[in-house]
Image (cartoon, rainbow, N blue to C red; front, side, top):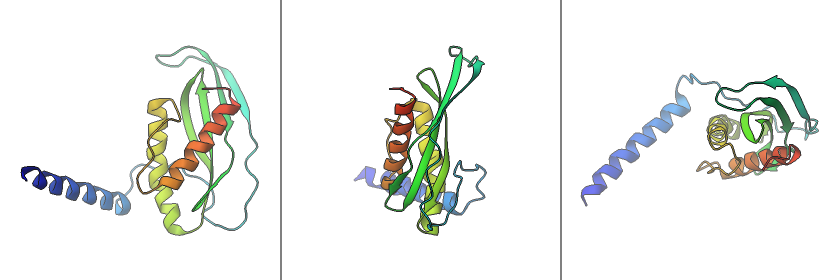
Length: 156
């Protein structure tokens, strides 16, 4: 019974933080690009596997950076595609060049969730991440598109 108070306080703080995140000033800009319209399916971006010149990574090995765009994944509330940049077998950058949602709420949710998913991928250097609660379809589509890009790059 003593812990019930802590759970209540922790839940209230988490809820307050969520409301601030929805309505706050938004200091961080999301990596979401693309149209918020649901009209048109549009062709997926050209699947590319580009390399740039050798560059030394801080704390890592030198080598070319390779980039690929994953397939356009349709999910329950829209469609998205993810571009991944890797150095060797390490994911160094992730962006979302295509995001189309069915409604404004889905767009707002994606703008909050995608930076979280991006952070998890960059921290894990892998697509094996935890999805975001309340955005299961978006999380699954994001992971599926990243896996597609990694497959194109022949990265685990």
